[in-house]
Amino acid sequence: MSLTKQQAQETQIMEGAVRTHDPSGRRQFFVSAGAFGAALAAPAAMAQAAASAPAPAPAPAPARKVLLKDDSRLLNIGATVRSGNYWNFSTFITPVEEFYVRNHYPTPMVEQRPVLDPRNWKMKIHGNAIERPIEITYDDLVKMPSRTIIATMECHGNGRSLFWEQQGQTQVAGGNWVLGAVGQAEWQYVPLSHIFGLVGLKKDAKSALFWSGVDGNDMGRPMPVSELIARGDDIGICFKMNGNDLLPDHGAPVRLIVPGWGGTASIKWLTEMRVDSHQHWVRLNTKGEVYIGPDYQAPAVGPTDEFIGGITPADVKGPMVTWMPIKSVITVPLVLDKSPSIPANYPLKRGELPKLPVGRQLVRGYAWAPQHGIRAVEYRVDGGPWQRAHIQGPNLGRYTWVRFDFMWDAPRGNHVIETRGIDTAGNMQPETVPLNILGMANGAIAKFKVQVV
Image 1 (tube, rainbow, N blue to C red):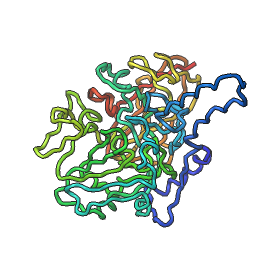
Image 2 (image 1 turned 30 degrees about the vertical axis):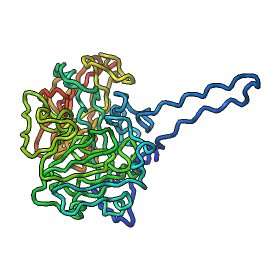
Image 3 (image 1 turned 45 degrees about the horizontal axis):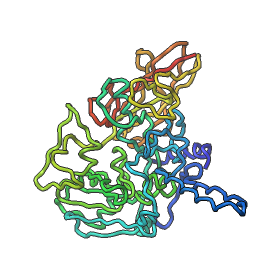
């Protein structure tokens, strides 16, 4: 589907952000633009070799791509990570071609991992806090009652650049995502409320560990059972994105979807869910995807806790990142001057300011507040008074972003534009956030430097 058609369909979203589906007749009302994952064409053989010439050596096999989808509309952050070019965003639903990718390892392929074929896929649901352990197939899953939800997904490292650029915290480590590791999609999933009804939870159920089983040997993350029960209709086992089957880079055939929490919680290539009466400690809630810094206290470790993949109690140094913060951006590239690295295909050189034309113009942006939803967006220029921006519909509240805009009579010279989101609970996007050495979840107000010419 073309972007024009996608934009035209956005009026349908006003009916609501969550839909329930009858397994006998699901409706797909978003289809991402374009075709994906085109195979590389093999070079044509030479028409004829000279009879007397020795047979040519076979050409080396093409290198295995670590990502499979077309990444021409993404920012290259590293081998297995791509950021969205947020300064080009315009749609309410992010096309899959523009949706960021954060993988820890190369995308697993069916040829090496046959379980990724929907005909072979199985998911084991078990643990000492499950009444009736089961194993479900892909066919079982898609026949279950499903729902769709429109929700942003955001990498924990999105905005890490602000630690370097605005807060001078050189000790922060990690990839330079800038501000584009976020997107909004329609996700179709079987809610965990239905799954829990099938298997039954014991009263002492404490932690659910969601495990990939095909992506490296340490790709799993726990969630408190209390959170899963509280949001059992919103969290689920996902098999479609924007009306299509998941792509391999986005977790095909099945992933978890946890609206509002950082993307790592939505484990890709899901094959196992274990619910136990004790806490689980793995890499992604100890050495990675946690807040570690002087303002954060390490969580308590219990005597019956389970440590997996070589993790020890000494690795528990800070709380796991959960809800993502309030954020807002305008569709202008952030100036990168102090960051340790700059993506190779970033549109600005180090220290270069983006250029805007002089005169009256419309400045556009996006704002999101996953826990409560956006109530208002404000902006200011060159430290002046905060003013209210216009929010463009739809605003579907919790889990979703809004598009906003404001008019600016831009005079010549260098300027700084700032925006801040305010959620429905009255929380406001802050000026700074506390240091955490992994650069997690920086929701500080971004200062967009521009040059008007």
